[in-house]
Image 1 (cartoon, helix red, strand yellow):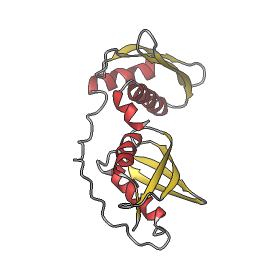
Image 2 (cartoon, helix red, strand yellow; image 1 turned 45 degrees about the vertical axis):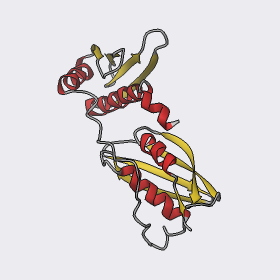
Image 3 (cartoon, rainbow, N blue to C red; image 1 turned 90 degrees about the horizontal axis):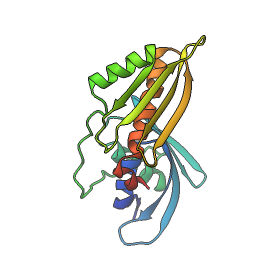
Length: 200
């Protein structure tokens, strides 16, 4: 009997790979045993890859997966199974994972071309905009250009009664500023998405 990531944890992992953070999980000896091994997974979501660090006992392993890959959670789960069963260092492949849940399609892009164009303009010149991302309330974004050092100060929020807010200053070229702004907007979108509960 091999250790494997249970299916409910696989669904949590699928949601967690869409955000950055540190999460605790267990692998179980399948199919009928109650033996479990706890491990910690640290996820740093980026573009084009997401970095995954797995700490299991005294072992630490890392893996990079393509952020847009529709089955990245299965790749990470197979890697976890291989670690739990002592196959990582030996190079032995884990058996293919079979799930009963249909794979969900990759979600559409959060922002459309018009919204991206507006954010690029704001990074160059400053300004304010409201971004409709499918929630009850828009994500409000204010950008102020910093002088004399190149950079931006950003205030972004979603909600009215108890708004979630991010405020930060980024130094660097426009590309770096836009990248940090988009990450912040994505985090606010994730916080306001009911799916986030699936990762808890």
